[in-house]
Image 1 (tube, rainbow, N blue to C red):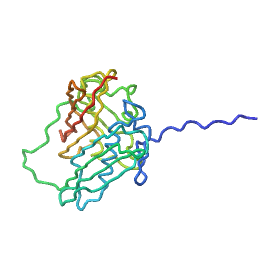
Image 2 (cartoon, rainbow, N blue to C red; image 1 turned 90 degrees about the vertical axis):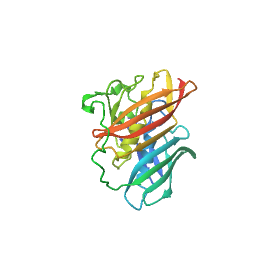
Image 3 (tube, one colour; image 1 turned 30 degrees about the horizontal axis):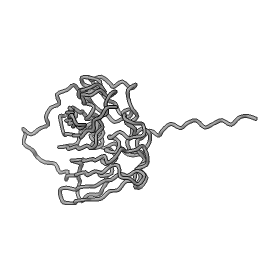
Image 4 (cartoon, rainbow, N blue to C red; image 1 turned 180 degrees about the horizontal axis):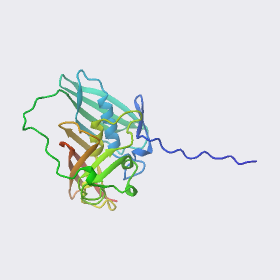
Length: 267
């Protein structure tokens, strides 16, 4: 009798989340560098942004600010989505989004959307020009050091390796779909990039953890094109806390800022 042939192990689907109603099914591609069972912060940040962008508004609006609190580690597991409009006005909409896993809240977020209406500005009002080389002139991140979430991005460092202490500015481009069957919005690109602020830490990644407990992004405008620049720096306190702050840019100039509060401890 011929022995039965076992089924091959299925490769994970080539997207980070599949959203079914009020549930986000998470694939292994969401995992970050600290623990294979925990999501990279850019994954829930992108998911929250996607949810908020689809909340109906009375006039065209776009995401201007995202404030994300990571209540506890976000597991690579199904996430229940709750959403509500906290404030609806003619010019703004404040959205509340919560993500839960196993009945426990893991992410609480507020997303501020502002009416999108073209303004005729004075000629001397313009973006601040970027001060680093364009992505084509930067070195590509070595794929051997990528964790699952970063493997879905193309990362190019302007001056140094992404995981070296005090790594320099870097360009990010999303290559793997974040939500199955959905395009990646410009605000989602910014959210993914912003969560890498702490890679500017002066601490050695092999010896220290410097995970962020939150993420705040403010954008004067949305990024243009596929590439988003992050130019960040980190300050570490002596009592286990730190902050990482970065400028967000594109080929046209800087358009936003991002900030994280860090929890610092030895590995």
